[in-house]
Image (cartoon, rainbow, N blue to C red; front, top):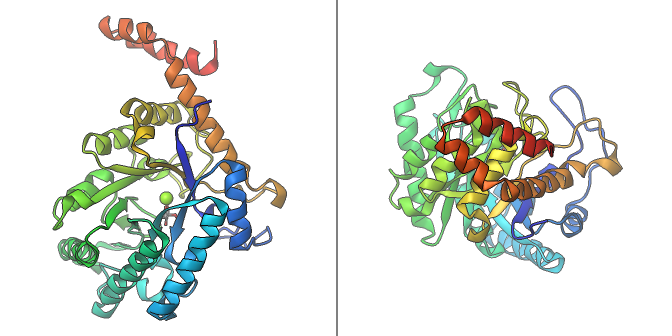
Length: 344
Ligand code: 3MF
Ligand code: MG
């Protein structure tokens, strides 16, 4: 098994199983206990929201933020873990009810930028330069609710202010087309990178592709990854899976579409992603039906499947590939891929 990839997940990926129709079904696990599981599961990186590190971020003084972030960092150090990024969790605050950077309320827009600066301070204390922006509520339920043109200007202005605030910061935009809003303003990596290029320092703004988010946009995740890779902008991934166009499922990687998973691993492997040192992040959810003692299998299984697929990519017969492409015989190539995946 190849061990040159670095894997990460977020503490929210160890969940109690609540869904919009029912309460938690598993006991909650304290943060310190979650962090203890990372190494034994074979993960090195921890994806973090600002309030994963420090609850009630908005109510704390700068000194308190610094102290609590340093304490969290020392737990990570003790566990031999690395913080991959910090993301401001703007969508859970009442202030972000109608969007954060694109809210119609000027006070809320100002809060969103201030809160993101707090997340940057936390990231600095934690020792990561990466800020992820999942623009959860930056969009609308009805088109007339906002001025979409103005909303894009707000987004660029907000990102500029964050880039100015910390000259070493790198911002990673995680696009998603819908959920929680009906239509998000930055639905795909194409939108994210076009936005990046309108900021004051485009080389410090990149993207993160999540499998399910690309699929919800009706796009092929591996081609989305290739698009970002071609621009030197694939700075993280959230691998998972999605069974058609429905709610964001965050299924175990490869569980719904093994062929698509193979192609995502293939594009990462062929581009030399492992050698960049960037993380292969998972954003997967345990099924609500899992018993507490079995509620980490989605993480391990996703990572194991990824590593098996790395081997599949590496062992695919190159001469067959070349011959089929030379003959333009894609039926033969398709069967060769399927046979290879099935091990026949
Ligand atoms: C939502 C997501 C988010 C982001 C996370 C990091 C809760 O569909 O994917 O997970 O990945 O907030 O910014
Ligand atoms: Mg995600």
